[in-house]
Length: 147
Image (cartoon, rainbow, N blue to C red; front, side, top):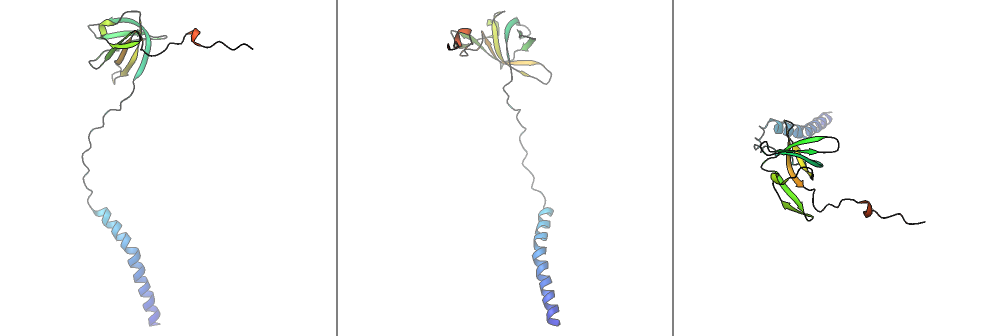
């Protein structure tokens, strides 16, 4: 009977050691002070493509550095910043341009970003439309084959 009690005790001790070690190790991991994380750099704002506009140039206000675009259903007033890039479509090529070179009534395309205050600021402006984009004409579409 003493032998059986000794075997049970030995088995119990071995089980306690096997089961107790991982618990004790896990407890130690939790009690360690957390290593201070390196201060992360502030996240840069996500670069987005902006919102595109296509329409006719309404007017240019050189003092307020804005211009209006008359789209099909609405009229947009877009501000200009020092980062705004202007291009002029000449002979199907985009040439660098300025705000002053816009002509009222001509086609204008580009993109703008909307700020937190709701102000639209131009990123790219193409006077006369963007070069390299073919406009669809009725003559460009193939005629249906005769039956």
